[in-house]
Amino acid sequence: MKTWLSILLTALMGFASAVPSQAQVKARNGMVVSTSGIASDVGVEVLKKGGNAVDAAVATAFALAVTHPAAGNIGGGGFLVCMKSDGAVTTIDFREKAPLKATRDMYLDEKGELIRNENHLSVRAIGVPGTVAGLYKAHQKYGRRPWATLVQPAIDLATLGFEMNWSLAGDAQYFVEQKSPFMSRYFLGETGKPTAPGEVWKQPALAGTLTAIRDRGHDGFYRGEVARKIAGFMQENNGLITEQDLARYEAMERPPVKGTYKDYEIYSMPPPSSGGVALVEMMNLMELADFKKLEFNSAAYVHFLAEAMRRAFADRAEFLGDPDFNPDMPLERLISKAHAKKRYAEIDMSKASVSDSTRFGQLYDGDSTTHFSVMDGEGNAVSLTYTLEYGYGSRMGSTELGFIFNNEMGDFNPIPGTTTSNGLIGTRPNLIEPEKRMLSSMTPTIVAKHGKPYLVIGSPGGRTIINTVFQTVLNVLEFDMEIDKAIEVMKIHHQWLPDRINYEKDLLSPDTGEILRSMGHAVVEQNSLGELMGIRLDAENDVMIGASDSSSSEGKASGY
Ligand code: GLY
Image (cartoon, rainbow, N blue to C red; front, side, top):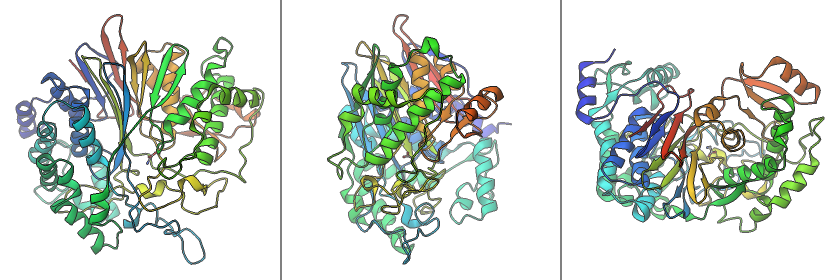
């Protein structure tokens, strides 16, 4: 039940309260689709006031840092892909970096073995955050509205509070049970108890940090009092990040990875994310298939997709890392049509190939990332994915600053040279080096048709991101599915190693599963894959059609 205060706040602030995920939503003038209805509405308010898609993205990202703290953040990093109304596409890389004091063996004991959880859940797993730098850079280059007006809605949400939802309340309870030192206090209300569903949850310390960012932009986070407090926290807790690390952090503008699929152009994130390269590799392979003979989600279809995924992930493991440290990555070759032809020819449609465990492997990857998509009425579009790595990242933070630090260092290859069939990747391009960006799977993507945005899409989900975005793009471009259906239909995931197909529970028919097993695939169910947030532009009818994945309880396509 809503409290009188939350109703009043909602009315005062002009935000519609979060509603359960809906099917498709249509709008003509602008749209934001995110995992938090409140944050989507913040973005749409910016559009209504004359902001462009970049302005709306900046405001939505800051709002998500308040309303969706599992992944929305100022203590993490991510990627933004932007298509401007003139058809030009650019990207902003605000991936976290390894601190200057990081070394390639920093997570190994004296026997050369990985110290349990050290690269995932320790203060030394925290990378130098990039989010504030990235949002500021995007705004400085492509935004229009005053910076302060884009940060202010997040400050208001943190100061005045917003209605606690069931999902956050469940997380609060979990952290209390876990006796997590920082997180068990994170959701406390004024009574000193975790804020219950329907009560108003305020975050005054976070509001203070956001105020410094509002007033001083990039420097409000990376220099001065906030930076000193971050460095002080690290020093007290044996962390590595210093004021020097923060002062040296810069977001980078990079050209997108570009591919084509039939009449469409695909723009996505280049390294240090592996997402764009793998997506284009797989779409090139799909272009060679005759889908008239491949029934959607039949055993043959799932087999073909899994074989494409296996190959793209093998290339990912072998070649990809931070471009500033790997100038020799064969990106042009990997995304070429010729490479796809070679890969296509290797696929045996009657049986599974075998992932070579002596060469590459995979490890569990954090799946608490978040994606949102934006279109404005002028023809600009933004696809933005950012993350803390695990849900609530390192689960650490300074109570004075009120935000959570990432644990992104876990995305580096932790043991040089050691690659196992069920565990680790040890290939060179993604080994730890000071100031290197760790390889990501985030795949914020814009598909264009005749030089205009056609589909804006992305997802959280660790390495599954690449595959859920890939399948959603294919569903729209090849199977003409509307965006809501394309997001909801069964997805699968294969990542080279472990050598298995994961599928969404209850959505694969047992008969299909049996055929896949008889072809040599290991087939494993999991609750769901991805949490896609997408917009398709129906240019003929001048309508934006948006949908948020039903696996997001608070997600919303908001448009006007
Ligand atoms: N931390 C998940 C990713 O960057 O892919």
